[in-house]
Image 1 (spheres, rainbow, N blue to C red):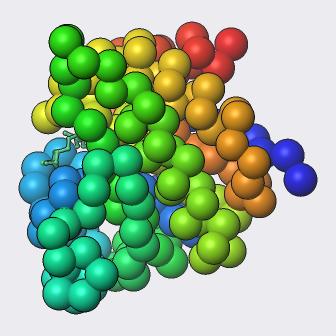
Image 2 (cartoon, rainbow, N blue to C red; image 1 turned 180 degrees about the horizontal axis):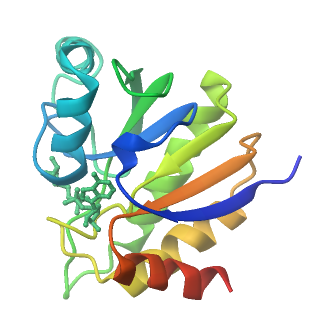
Length: 170
Ligand code: AR6
Protein backbone atom coordinates (compact mmCIF):
# COMPACT_ATOMS: atom_id res chain seq x y z
CA UNK A 1 0.00 0.00 0.00
CA UNK A 2 1.55 3.33 -0.95
CA UNK A 3 1.24 6.46 1.12
CA UNK A 4 -0.04 9.68 -0.42
CA UNK A 5 1.27 12.97 0.94
CA UNK A 6 -1.16 15.88 0.71
CA UNK A 7 -0.92 19.54 1.76
CA UNK A 8 -3.55 21.93 2.99
CA UNK A 9 -3.38 25.41 4.41
CA UNK A 10 -5.42 25.89 7.57
CA UNK A 11 -6.05 25.09 11.19
CA UNK A 12 -5.28 21.47 12.12
CA UNK A 13 -8.08 21.44 14.70
CA UNK A 14 -10.58 21.84 11.81
CA UNK A 15 -9.34 18.74 10.01
CA UNK A 16 -11.02 15.36 9.87
CA UNK A 17 -8.58 12.45 10.01
CA UNK A 18 -8.10 9.24 11.96
CA UNK A 19 -5.26 10.90 13.88
CA UNK A 20 -4.17 14.51 14.38
CA UNK A 21 -0.57 15.09 15.48
CA UNK A 22 0.03 17.58 18.28
CA UNK A 23 3.28 19.57 18.46
CA UNK A 24 3.43 19.12 22.22
CA UNK A 25 6.08 19.61 24.87
CA UNK A 26 7.49 17.01 27.26
CA UNK A 27 5.06 17.91 30.04
CA UNK A 28 2.08 16.80 27.89
CA UNK A 29 0.08 19.33 29.89
CA UNK A 30 -0.56 21.88 27.16
CA UNK A 31 0.97 25.07 25.84
CA UNK A 32 0.52 27.55 23.01
CA UNK A 33 0.36 27.16 19.22
CA UNK A 34 -1.01 23.85 17.93
CA UNK A 35 -0.97 22.39 21.44
CA UNK A 36 -3.14 25.16 22.85
CA UNK A 37 -5.56 24.95 19.93
CA UNK A 38 -5.91 21.15 20.19
CA UNK A 39 -6.67 21.23 23.91
CA UNK A 40 -9.06 24.18 23.50
CA UNK A 41 -11.09 22.63 20.73
CA UNK A 42 -10.66 19.00 21.82
CA UNK A 43 -11.90 19.61 25.35
CA UNK A 44 -10.83 18.27 28.76
CA UNK A 45 -10.81 14.55 27.86
CA UNK A 46 -7.45 14.97 26.11
CA UNK A 47 -5.80 16.64 29.09
CA UNK A 48 -7.24 13.98 31.40
CA UNK A 49 -5.52 11.24 29.38
CA UNK A 50 -2.30 13.26 29.24
CA UNK A 51 -2.34 13.57 33.02
CA UNK A 52 -2.88 9.80 33.31
CA UNK A 53 0.13 9.21 31.03
CA UNK A 54 2.25 11.46 33.26
CA UNK A 55 1.07 9.49 36.30
CA UNK A 56 1.99 6.16 34.69
CA UNK A 57 4.28 5.57 31.70
CA UNK A 58 5.78 9.06 31.39
CA UNK A 59 6.43 10.23 34.93
CA UNK A 60 9.35 12.34 33.72
CA UNK A 61 7.51 13.55 30.64
CA UNK A 62 7.55 12.43 27.02
CA UNK A 63 11.10 12.57 25.66
CA UNK A 64 11.87 14.70 22.60
CA UNK A 65 11.39 12.73 19.37
CA UNK A 66 8.85 10.31 20.88
CA UNK A 67 5.09 10.04 20.33
CA UNK A 68 2.09 8.84 22.32
CA UNK A 69 -1.64 8.71 21.55
CA UNK A 70 -4.70 9.86 23.48
CA UNK A 71 -8.36 10.27 22.64
CA UNK A 72 -9.15 13.18 20.31
CA UNK A 73 -11.98 14.34 22.57
CA UNK A 74 -14.35 16.62 20.65
CA UNK A 75 -12.08 16.89 17.58
CA UNK A 76 -13.14 15.27 14.31
CA UNK A 77 -10.62 12.44 14.72
CA UNK A 78 -10.23 9.24 16.69
CA UNK A 79 -6.86 10.00 18.23
CA UNK A 80 -4.43 12.78 18.95
CA UNK A 81 -0.82 11.67 18.64
CA UNK A 82 1.33 13.91 20.83
CA UNK A 83 4.96 14.29 19.81
CA UNK A 84 7.70 16.52 21.17
CA UNK A 85 9.79 18.32 18.59
CA UNK A 86 13.31 19.57 19.28
CA UNK A 87 13.98 23.24 19.97
CA UNK A 88 16.04 24.67 17.06
CA UNK A 89 19.72 25.07 17.82
CA UNK A 90 22.25 26.83 15.61
CA UNK A 91 25.16 25.07 17.34
CA UNK A 92 23.84 21.49 17.49
CA UNK A 93 22.25 19.39 14.74
CA UNK A 94 18.97 18.08 16.14
CA UNK A 95 17.56 17.00 12.77
CA UNK A 96 17.43 13.36 13.79
CA UNK A 97 15.07 14.23 16.63
CA UNK A 98 12.74 16.08 14.27
CA UNK A 99 12.81 13.11 11.88
CA UNK A 100 12.09 10.83 14.83
CA UNK A 101 8.90 12.78 15.66
CA UNK A 102 7.56 11.89 12.21
CA UNK A 103 8.72 8.27 12.30
CA UNK A 104 7.39 7.67 15.81
CA UNK A 105 4.05 9.32 15.04
CA UNK A 106 3.64 7.01 12.04
CA UNK A 107 4.64 4.01 14.15
CA UNK A 108 1.97 4.90 16.74
CA UNK A 109 -0.54 5.48 13.92
CA UNK A 110 0.21 1.99 12.59
CA UNK A 111 -0.25 0.48 16.06
CA UNK A 112 -3.65 2.16 16.30
CA UNK A 113 -4.68 1.20 12.78
CA UNK A 114 -5.00 4.84 11.64
CA UNK A 115 -5.19 5.23 7.87
CA UNK A 116 -5.21 9.03 7.65
CA UNK A 117 -3.03 11.32 9.73
CA UNK A 118 -2.59 15.09 9.80
CA UNK A 119 0.68 16.70 10.86
CA UNK A 120 1.41 20.34 11.66
CA UNK A 121 4.85 21.78 10.86
CA UNK A 122 6.42 20.45 14.06
CA UNK A 123 9.01 22.68 15.79
CA UNK A 124 8.53 25.63 13.40
CA UNK A 125 6.67 27.87 15.86
CA UNK A 126 7.69 28.39 19.47
CA UNK A 127 10.64 26.01 18.87
CA UNK A 128 11.95 28.24 15.99
CA UNK A 129 13.03 25.59 13.46
CA UNK A 130 13.56 27.24 10.02
CA UNK A 131 10.51 26.39 7.87
CA UNK A 132 12.36 25.25 4.72
CA UNK A 133 14.56 22.85 6.66
CA UNK A 134 11.63 21.53 8.70
CA UNK A 135 9.70 20.91 5.47
CA UNK A 136 12.69 19.01 4.01
CA UNK A 137 13.02 16.78 7.07
CA UNK A 138 9.27 16.17 7.39
CA UNK A 139 8.72 15.24 3.73
CA UNK A 140 11.91 13.12 3.43
CA UNK A 141 11.13 11.23 6.63
CA UNK A 142 7.54 10.45 5.68
CA UNK A 143 8.70 9.31 2.22
CA UNK A 144 11.29 7.01 3.76
CA UNK A 145 9.18 5.49 6.54
CA UNK A 146 7.33 2.25 5.76
CA UNK A 147 3.75 2.57 7.04
CA UNK A 148 0.23 1.31 6.44
CA UNK A 149 -1.05 4.91 6.67
CA UNK A 150 -2.69 5.79 3.35
CA UNK A 151 -2.74 9.57 3.60
CA UNK A 152 -0.27 11.81 5.39
CA UNK A 153 -1.65 15.34 5.31
CA UNK A 154 0.52 18.29 6.27
CA UNK A 155 -1.64 21.11 7.60
CA UNK A 156 0.19 24.39 7.24
CA UNK A 157 -1.00 27.43 9.08
CA UNK A 158 -0.01 30.12 6.59
CA UNK A 159 0.96 30.68 2.97
CA UNK A 160 4.69 30.75 3.72
CA UNK A 161 4.61 27.34 5.40
CA UNK A 162 2.42 25.91 2.66
CA UNK A 163 4.87 27.16 -0.01
CA UNK A 164 7.84 25.64 1.83
CA UNK A 165 6.19 22.21 1.96
CA UNK A 166 4.93 22.47 -1.63
CA UNK A 167 8.49 23.17 -2.80
CA UNK A 168 9.74 20.02 -1.07
CA UNK A 169 6.96 17.87 -2.40
CA UNK A 170 7.99 18.82 -5.93
N1 AR6 B 1 -3.08 24.55 13.01
C1 AR6 B 1 -1.99 24.30 12.23
N2 AR6 B 1 -0.79 24.87 12.43
C2 AR6 B 1 -0.68 25.72 13.47
C3 AR6 B 1 -1.76 26.03 14.34
C4 AR6 B 1 -3.00 25.40 14.06
N3 AR6 B 1 -4.09 25.63 14.82
N4 AR6 B 1 -1.31 26.92 15.29
C5 AR6 B 1 0.00 27.15 15.01
N5 AR6 B 1 0.38 26.45 13.91
P1 AR6 B 1 3.97 25.48 17.52
P2 AR6 B 1 6.46 23.99 18.09
C6 AR6 B 1 1.71 26.36 13.27
O1 AR6 B 1 4.50 26.67 18.23
O2 AR6 B 1 7.29 24.97 17.35
C7 AR6 B 1 3.64 24.87 22.37
O3 AR6 B 1 3.58 25.83 23.38
C8 AR6 B 1 2.72 27.41 13.64
O4 AR6 B 1 2.56 28.56 12.80
O5 AR6 B 1 2.57 25.07 17.74
O6 AR6 B 1 6.70 22.51 17.87
C9 AR6 B 1 3.91 23.48 22.90
O7 AR6 B 1 3.28 23.27 24.15
C10 AR6 B 1 4.03 26.69 13.35
O8 AR6 B 1 4.36 26.75 11.96
O9 AR6 B 1 4.87 24.16 17.86
C11 AR6 B 1 5.40 23.44 23.01
O10 AR6 B 1 5.84 24.04 24.23
C12 AR6 B 1 3.72 25.22 13.67
O11 AR6 B 1 2.30 25.14 13.71
C13 AR6 B 1 5.87 24.28 21.86
O12 AR6 B 1 4.78 25.16 21.57
C14 AR6 B 1 4.28 24.71 15.00
O13 AR6 B 1 4.20 25.74 15.97
C15 AR6 B 1 6.12 23.47 20.61
O14 AR6 B 1 6.64 24.31 19.62
